[in-house]
Image 1 (cartoon, rainbow, N blue to C red):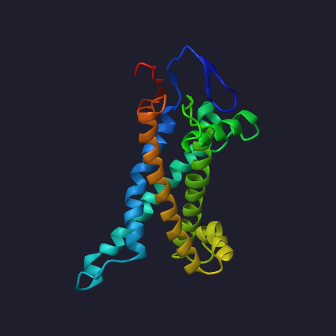
Image 2 (image 1 turned 180 degrees about the horizontal axis):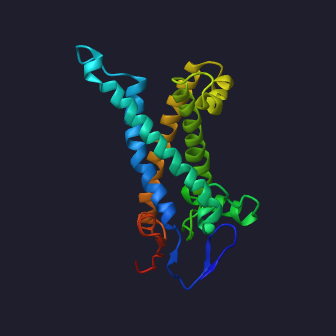
Image 3 (image 1 turned 120 degrees about the horizontal axis):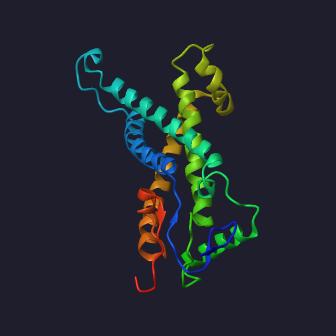
Length: 235
């Protein structure tokens, strides 16, 4: 099977299965999925707290549990994200695309526009891709990677507020408050970044199911077993 260098587009057969997503990439993906659910729920509740149950707050501890769950999931989300950045450098060539796309390659840009034309119904047949197609790479970088970075930095900046100004947390993330001018602006950006990432999640899920059905290769099962399987014309 001949694969176009730079874009990952299949340009000649015979078609054969390819091991694309290594175990660390798949593990990061599903850990991120599992962490984003409680993060979104608890983050919303922190931004718009529920009414008091009644009685002394010391004995209910409900909001403290919301914060603990949010902070714990945020730590796991961040560690997994850092692991994914590391694997972008040491993993196989398909692990690079989320952080190191081949934007210097003419074939990559050509693939991006070819896929865009297909989505705009200006191209009848989709191409076959071994890894993520260039348009998907660009979308994930601009939405997921950018959104995740904003969430991580603003989130830890808000977390650092509960510690002394001379503490290590403020030393690492206190500059974020200086960038935005005041803590409330940091909270607003953090909250909006959550919605930005949730928009990406909706688009990502839709496109994954759409391409698994209408595309020429498997998508969802590839993130389970790591293997890209190409569909025959008969299929």
